[in-house]
Structures are given as structure tokens and as C-alpha cells.
Length: 190
Ligand code: FNR
Image (cartoon, rainbow, N blue to C red; front, side, top):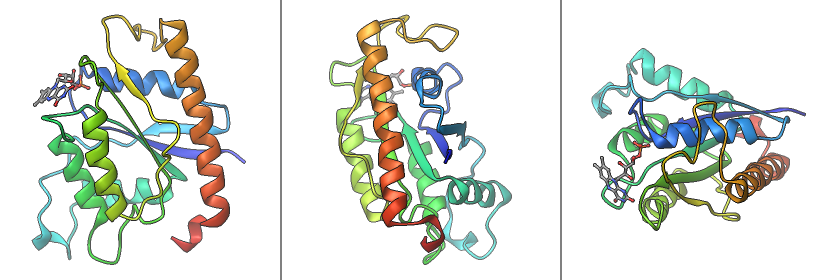
């Protein structure tokens, strides 16, 4: 069957290279994956005093994550960790206690940076956070993409053939991963 994938970009910058990468990944995804963005830029700062009265943007975030079969997080590394905007979204998604939208949700993590180790440290931080949220993560394959000008063109095409092939393989693996996780952890159990 087709699977719905919520794509979260960790950067809220309109000019984000990670959003560019995300759009390219959506284009390279197998037909069985129906990908759409889940936006995090309208969320207020998480406040546990609002656990009993979630704001509409946070309710919508949880609904979108809950309905998706899998989540793909495409994120930059900020100061060797993840952007605050992404951590904030995860905090909203994970609460109130006992109603964690990320519980058992298959997750893929990928990112790009101009730096040579292309988000590797930030991704490790994200894995620690998502482990606590009980989200099964695709550990193989990993993808650390060093961004060079023009890597993704304005039509969301990857211009370097070897990178394009690698990213296609990444999305095929993610499709396979989501399929396998849902076999043992059906969504209704979430
Ligand atoms: C960065 N950048 C960065 N790059 C990196 O490889 N490791 C890092 O720790 C950081 N730290 C960092 C902190 C902050 C606050 C900013 C704004 C930037 C550079 C970063 O990779 C670059 O700006 C990317 O373009 C950010 O991704 P988006 O927003 O374009 O998707």
C-alpha cells in the first residue's frame, strides 16, 4: 500500500538548504511514499502550562504526525546540535505526558550542511532525543550530505549524479524501513 510520510525540515529559513534537500528527496522517493511537509514555524515556544489547552498549531502538528505512517526529518546542525525550532516541535509533539505523537513512529533522519561532516553531530543529538520519544529510527543507511552551491537546482533536482543515486537509495531504504516497522508495530497500536 502507499504510505504517508510527514517531512519535517529542521530549518525555518525560507532559503534553507535543508528544505531544498527535502524537496529533492520527495522527488526521488519511491511512488509508494506520499510525502508532504509538516510545518513547524508557527509554533509558540513549548510551555507545559498549556498541556491542558494546546494551541491550535500544536494540535495540528500532533494530528499530522499521528496520521503519518512515517516521519522524515531533514535538518541542519546548529552549534553541533539541532535547531531550537525543531526541538520545540518535538517537545510539543511528545506531550502531554502519555500522549506522545512520536511513540513508535518510524523516523528517518538526514541533513545537509556546507561543513565537511555535514550534520553528523546534530543527527546524533537528534537520535538521542528521538530514542527517548520511543521512535524507531532507520540506522542504516546514514546520510550526511555536504552542501555545495547548486547541489539541488531550482526544480528540486540533485545535480551530482552519484549523490542523486545515493539519495534515491536512501529513500528506497526508508520506504522499506517504514514498511517493516509497521509490520511489527501497526499504527493502531501507537
Ligand atoms: C550553523 N551552521 C553550522 N554548520 C555545521 O555544519 N555545524 C554547526 O554546528 C553549525 N552551527 C550553526 C549554528 C547556527 C546558529 C547557524 C545559523 C548555522 C551552518 C549551517 O550549516 C548553515 O547555515 C546551513 O545553511 C543551515 O541550514 P539551512 O538553514 O540552510 O537549512
